[in-house]
Length: 389
Image (cartoon, rainbow, N blue to C red; front, side, top):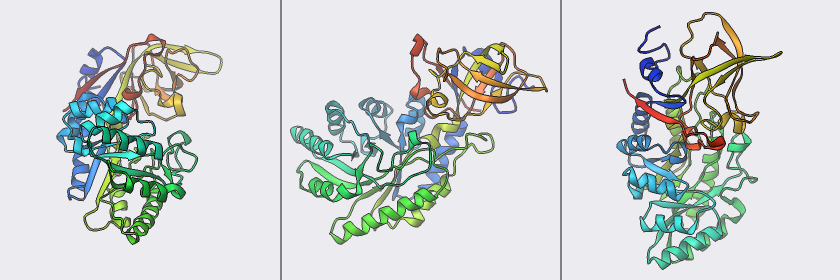
């Protein structure tokens, strides 16, 4: 085995020298993804906002800013992080059903590009706060189009049972109110139907729903400046080496070809997982290999505190043993040290014979890994390192 780079492309000397557990970020993968986004959205009518909730690491945000993307935000802390990274406030959108007063004030004060409004009470509060500050806030109405994206129920956001957005039957009332309020400017419509979507059919249905709304309001003399179609594009968790980049071209072209934009309307996206998911890997070390009557367990020093997705909704991440030189393969459950039965990274995982001290890579962990890490069990937050070849 090459001591410098193994067959999955990891720089082994760097990995061996870094205390585990930690997140390893491949900047080459991230930059190739961002370059592809810029290629596909080179025209001025298309703008991508990076969903900071996927990964707010300052080094990640620096790369986002350097490639000219905007930011999609869901908290005041994310607004501050995006501003500190140098992302222009005019290229920020602020989503979420529970915006607090101080967060709204922060957004209004910095004149962020758009608040994605999710309820009448929120609309009224934004108008009130903007008025007290003698400002006008740009808003888009988040529409809940009642489309099932056929993803996990915990990451579906566009059906009538979800807490997000304005239901279609209430949309007329909300738009009428928004146009009457003196301290908000109705800029556009906003949609987001879920996450880890790998088929284009839900997006085609979303385009059809959006077209009907655009047509309807145009007949009423209402023309929106922006149509924000959200994000949710999935990545290939099973084959990260074969598919390091998501199907960005298929995704973006679906909207460009099926959405009937009017002259001057801007098409916006809010992508997170698809941008950073494949560039990140959780690296950990084997503490023990334990056998009982029915199972072999590989117990590692990372846990659900470092990567919660498998415990939260049984998410799949490919697992590699980076240091075993064994040809023989065994079946293991790869588990962490946290005192919870859900602290499991993989069931029935086929790995080369694994021993104490081996380095384990948990792949496709760049999105919703580090950003969701916690100190449960009073564990330290994981480190992060960045590498470019």
